[in-house]
Image 1 (cartoon, helix red, strand yellow):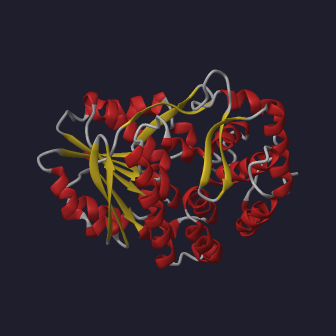
Image 2: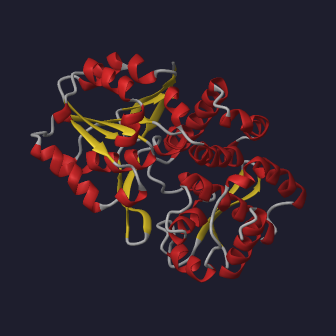
Length: 366
């Protein structure tokens, strides 16, 4: 097992990464539990697929059916209604401040459960067991929790760091290709933001990701967690430096809503990164020879990005609802080259839409 320490201003915790990580970390969970009661919220579909493993885990921790809440992990459940259902279940089953919540599932599960743990009894601890590549490398790290609200992604939420993150690589073997693509979107983002070595390694090994090569996946997850941990240490609550992690996300979040969530988050991020590179070119920030090289990493992924023709007249109003904006200005993270990043760039609407059109052409959107 590989351990990485996350040092945030609000506390320190471990990320544990390895094969069969759930069952190999029963004792670790017991130590974190102490005298607290365990309440587990698990993605119901994941539970059905990995039933034997999870039942063994629950048995060893003495988690009964009454301590279990099965969550249907879909974007439509990142709502106040589902949050209230979880909180009501905790109260109805007699849980109080002496509670430790286990969140087992992908990013949607982690976001909602993390937020529930942040507000239940003014905050109880939780352990995150991310089960998708996207959650492994992104949403499980850094303490962002939340729900969607009023056509906006994650507009209501809290910063609430977990007690630990346990990444079991075996869960990745049940993922369809589109879910692996989602994780790749965030890993590509880290490569552009921080590391030419990661960019080159990823370019050589993208096929190995889809072939579920364990050592390749572990290296990519470890590198990604370390890189995100370094950002969280400097800026836990996104007051400045952490904004760089929004590369590709401004357009991605608007696109997810415009497409009525018909495109996965990581695929939308990939589209958003390509559009942001075109914006960087239009603003004269990035050299053409860099751009051609950078686009090569997307060649293996082009055919996997599926979306309907974008309704451009809806995009700008959705972009204006992004929580990162200030003073009705749409803020972008842009690049001069790998690891040379500019944040909070105001971009004219015309350039945004022109770059989106170029990205549509790049991905052969009809």
